[in-house]
Length: 420
Image 1 (tube, rainbow, N blue to C red):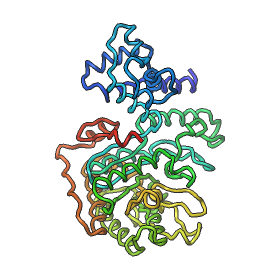
Image 2 (image 1 turned 120 degrees about the horizontal axis):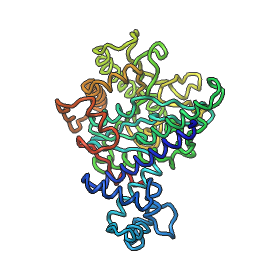
Image 3 (image 1 turned 180 degrees about the vertical axis):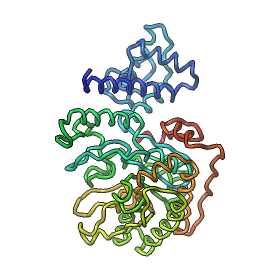
Image 4 (image 1 turned 135 degrees about the vertical axis):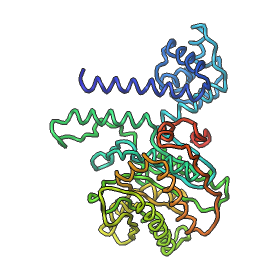
């Protein structure tokens, strides 16, 4: 069995697992799920794509909106079920399935709402991604789990690539590695899906149609609708970097996007206010990291980067949270403050040692969220709903088990957010 056959087998397994997840999201009891899964397999429905096609009337293409509005009698799947002697699906079940399937197939991401506080955490590099004109961007391990832990602690929302899309990118990455006769002889990401655009490297021409950007904008609109248009909003973009000395510190805070907005006067903030936010983050997060036994040791645990983009490409440091203006690309933090309307946005670059520590210890992740929240509140000088206390029984294992999209522990995905 060669590498391509193994990858094909792996992708089939992922399709079956994703179909099972769709069924879990719509049928509450184990008995109903098992019965539904068996019915679908007997009707030849063995993937989410096949299920959406079977829900869509013959006159529509692969589009759930047409299927969602169709009567049960028009649904091709109902005809198959009826012929096999099974009960047909109700109209509301068809509509919910179509919404779920369209989101999974087309958006390929997981949005989790943890509370009503105006805070969004993103993890755009939790899979291998092709990047225009550059080598493949490596997957940054643990960033999904950290982003979702932060969102839970901060009582906000999180966006990450779906777990199954992560698995799929790993399969295609390893296929590229198996084809390489020697290291770097070919692009190891040549088999990756080019439709998965890097959310942290978008051109101005494509950004408004990008699914990640649209989800960010929808969540921000929800915050403004619920809390008022003048309420401050925080965006935290979670990334991974190399351990020291490959990177000078265990944590790098990038605020270049905020500084550029302050310099252009677009949002009403000042450079001094951005610097105050950076100083508060550095203080709070340095206190946290000093209490941890991070290895390898380094002289600087936390550093803040906020170069002026107006000074030109050579002055824009790596990991600062913004691309040079000449690059004509936008990071998540640039999109957040320039286009979406977040008042505060920071890029956090975490060393691998720090990421591992945050995933192993729920208490450390809890303290990270509180440190970020405290720094932000110091800067905006206003009150927000208080943070909820984490249950004393919470453990890293509990968080890991819920990171794949379950609704345990109060985690929920909003249909209104998903249906962009």
